[in-house]
Image 1: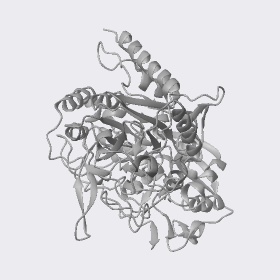
Image 2: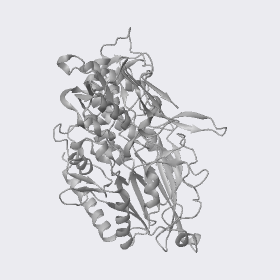
Image 3: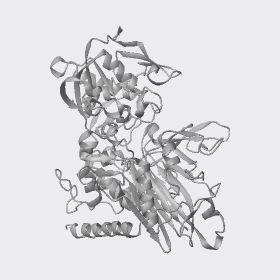
Image 4: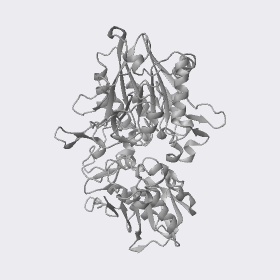
Length: 601
């Protein structure tokens, strides 16, 4: 049966929301201390529970390896890894947290989809949208990965309809889209100058109204393929939030939360690290700090993301008053619980010098009951994916860490780079001499322990897909030695990578020293850069293979756009699977030693 009538009802609901936001949308006068703290008696305030998470990336099944743990700081200062994540457990955790709460709203800060494991990615993330609907997500901002497949596909995620090329995946069922609004306040159409989606959303229950403004990072075009953001402009986060906070405020919405797909870097990787020591927000750095300090005091809380880090800080607003800034790591391993004290008379949030109770990141542990509806959802999509997902691709001799490893050089990164070099080294395949791989393109680890019935050490198609889900085509290009040197320097310098380095993964035979005791481009020890033992010659031309995202200058590697003589090869996933296919149960692939980049600390 067609779901078109239902989708029309959803469109009407979202239209009404948009009208309400235009006619009643407001920026909340940030209940700075005077407004909220003085004279707001207990009898006129109610607690609103804000549950939030970010960077879910379609991770429906519990992630494997180090990607499926969070670091927990112990009382004695030591840390331990705690298994976490999986939508079956996330659903249970959120539902338990909501019990007994009269006012509870659930919000997210982008990258709900994109870069997803095969169970969701194979079906263009329809399973994830279905799961988020079941989670009762109320609102989310867009993130950069929402644009991986372009504007039209993002709109399909919201409004529904079957895939334009692949059609409907389940017999008699049409994809109905999201039951929650996606907010994109700072993403405008280059021609019309209008936001491509609703900029704001007002959540209402009884006499309580809370406005949400959703933005993604202004630098989204730097981390997404050009085709994905064609015809769109990404505007300044602070200017956009302040603009819509003022509009909401004029319309009488005094309580406002900003959902920002941009984040920070806490001094510790432990989810329970106190980033307010020795002072408010002292333990966090990165782009979100300046954003938080400049977003109008009308905004009462900032839910952030993008960096995949966990923090719950107080960073003073422009008026000098405390304001919570939170992020719940990634992949559904954590969620944040924030209590907003809502003044029923002023319609504003009461903000005090010390939040009570303070926002807290909570682990999505796997020692709770699985949510039956999520188990059914996973099983249903697994059945559809099984003929492809369960095919064995190759064999490994042990865990090969990738996404979950903090070290600059990752064993899985080396393996991927080697696979790309092997796929393109032959003269008729491009004649590549070395490979470069962006670390953000590695979406998971490869775990030795079997996830299903395939057996330990077997890498299935589903697992290799999860490692590299973007289907980027390999580009073999000419770069001079000088351009290669500049590319390495751009890993640790410039507006995008200076504060948060992006260390390229390199193929066998390519070596150099990274001196982290220095700053900026000086961190690259130029005379240490060698290919097969020979120093890189700045005047010589080299054949280099990389994915099309890097070749387009993605992730701040502008010099890579200057390449010449491009030859397009196979996809990165095909190259990876071909490399895996050469292994056998008797001769599995050993985890690379990750000794190509010498790091000086």
